[in-house]
Length: 185
Picture 1 (cartoon, rainbow, N blue to C red):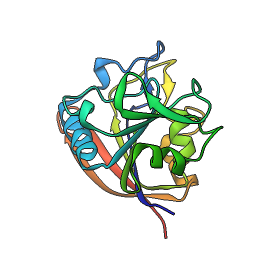
Picture 2 (picture 1 turned 180 degrees about the vertical axis):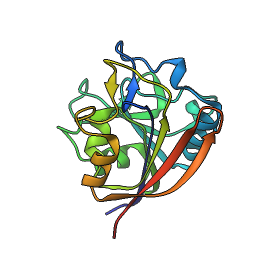
Picture 3 (picture 1 turned 120 degrees about the horizontal axis):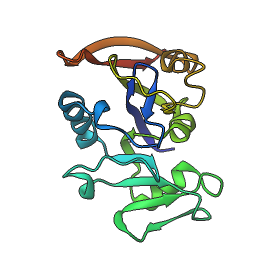
Picture 4 (picture 1 turned 120 degrees about the vertical axis):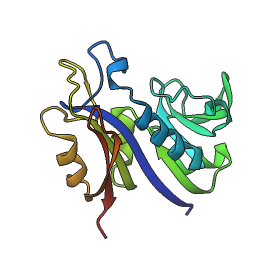
């Protein structure tokens, strides 16, 4: 079995949203400190996993190997738009099959969303980096995880065996922080 370490990343509004009502991450949820933290994490990853609508859109993005969760393929195959990407349908193939297609057999996997992709990996996550923008609200927006806003992101992470540990300030002026939620042994 491949030896992977899984890290999750998301920034959320005070009400637990990762996107506005139109499904777009608004500029009000984008902060240079969080972007720098996120970019550094992705630069250290051996593989990135995300859904069709989640992406990082950064200068290094084309250089990163990735698996894109998609129902447009039966099992696993190349992404015709990106030679560094593998398309994966979890209903037709295992994650390990997708990793083999991507040519990644060990290392750090960065899971960057969306909500259903996070849900698939909750029980594999070693550390989930939950960034929070406490002064941003996105009424009617898209919750970061299935079950938000009925439950808080913190409650959901905790229910999957993760525990809050160190907190870093990413933007003091806007009180944006990131909390490491680590797997409890």
